[in-house]
Image (cartoon, rainbow, N blue to C red):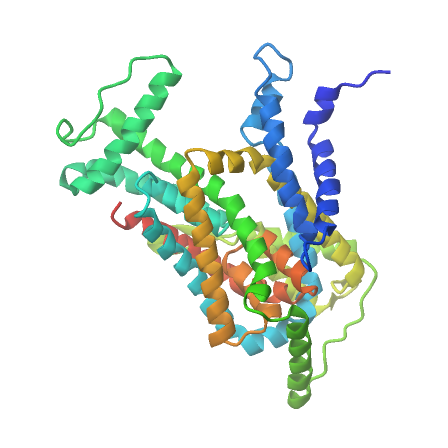
Length: 471
């Protein structure tokens, strides 16, 4: 009998199931009246990911596990396709569950959802840019990555990387005409990269570029600056993303305690008001019968959602925009679930079955995300990335709080829907899962579906605008 411990430890499925087991146990622990629930898998994943990376650096180049260890060090422990699949299944199940109440919620709060879809990305952009001015060590390109990371937007990240290349090229060409402050930031980025690369290759460190000895940017230094600009977006996003998810999860759980209202009372008010509104309008609740499970219907919703998310829309000088698999899937599943049935294909399925599917696949995503980002999160907190950590945390908190204050006190949206609108405004599917878990019903998904697509568009627009502002 043989047992290879190293291969076992590095196996992604072993890690996923271990973290899901420990994370769900941790999530059941009560801290007063609060428990982390399914999001406990994220926290345990971060811990496991950190120690796994520490283990990975112990392997020498001669080891047969060296390449696997290097993947672990680069944060590629759990493959992206597995995480994407788990998130897609979670979103489709969520959309189908919430669809029966979609028409009522959209009709009552549609304009407010549109407003929040613009307000949340705008507040995030303004706070990201403003806070970056307080931290001289943060690259202007890391700021955009931090913005898209703190608001957990993949579409924003793609737009930010593309626009960073265009804007960094423009700045190198226009360098002689820039203000000294902007020139200094550009030269600082180039100098840091030159020092890092020289030390890595054990070469002599090039002469430091200063305002006095640099009138124009050489082609080599321009290429360095452009590469660092794109890399800076990625660094800011990779550090900001887990903190954005983390504080959104904490936000939807602690906002009721902070502002002293009961989610259970909000739930009672919502359904009582809904019943009253439907009776006054003479409309019966949508009571399309449920089937136990229709895998054809579920798979069709996922396929059409993925198809819609793959379509790129041209938006003039801003380039192209796609909803992504998550945006497309939430829209399609809400529409099909609202229709209920097309011929022999059913989209109204047993709530318990869909609920269990949704919870399980969200746990896979959160566990995998924690494992992949664990070391970076700890390293960022304790190392050079602390400025980005602070900015991302503040951006997430400011965006969440302002969205809540506007939605609750100005728009008077019930917390059952507002929690979903906030996560939709931040385009955060993991946040939606936390909102559903926190309120104990599916209503947040309706507001998420109403806000996420438009919020994605404005996230892209604001990401591009940030790069056009003075650095």
